[in-house]
Image (cartoon, rainbow, N blue to C red):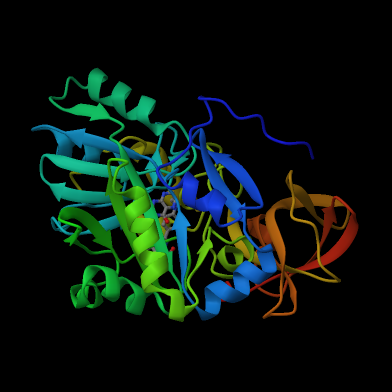
Length: 367
Ligand code: THG
């Protein structure tokens, strides 16, 4: 493929200087912003992520800020997840659905207080939906994109590295909780979260000026930990069953289809967007659902379009993410499979871009 042309529309980040200096080999575009996809190679990055610690520029996980007296009311209308017990230092993975129950985004919500939230979004223009909903409902709340750029520190040595830069307090942060901690006199939200299952943190860097100083401090403090630059890793995230909005699911899919039913718990008095459609689906059950799928043979090239899943000449689903797993010595994949064919052990075929392979529905993801 040819190069991406760069312009102001394709936004740089506060860390782009560091990412380029460390030798990024490929980018994708996410929320109209640069997101690295490869440093050494996808396989070498994967091995390193599982053994050491990496610093990821995930600035493209942009924030939608809700600020004002009705911020919590707006948040409650946006998601089918029950937020009643959510504390001021918590993060929740929250499906966002439209009036038909279709997924608009699968962000992480960060609660600062009853009148201030961040929604840390996946790749869709959620800001417009949130502004429209607030306006239509006449709510007293400002909705905007603040200058906040998440930096993820992921891998088994993330605790040690972060303790050296932010102090031992980081070790006490529980999963999907955060603390405000100081770096060079400025306080940042530091959460135990991130788009891998190797453990780690996300620092929400407010403003651009602290970006490179923090990046440099992490690399200096982690030299003996073999710290390297990284990015969300295709192989690791498939093994871990972390979904990618726009790849594994779109507006056409419901949270139940995406296996995110556990993050939807409407109560008697909830009246969030899409409630009626979701109640109907709960009665009937989803007609298809995300599954872990293995694909036989040698390494596949990752799909750039959905690969049909077939049974007896009939299309019964599609594979949307796939990669060779060095640890599991098979191609690991994520796909959407029709109800009749989604049981573990089901033998299917998949029409990859390079030919037909056999595929098996798995009991669960690999990690
Ligand atoms: N971190 C932050 N923002 C993000 C992402 C992130 N925005 C975009 C994208 N990732 C949103 N999608 C996801 C998908 C999965 C998870 C987080 C965001 C995730 N899931 C865990 C799981 O499924 O096991 C934990 C969910 C839970 O138990 O609450 O972490 O990565 N800031």
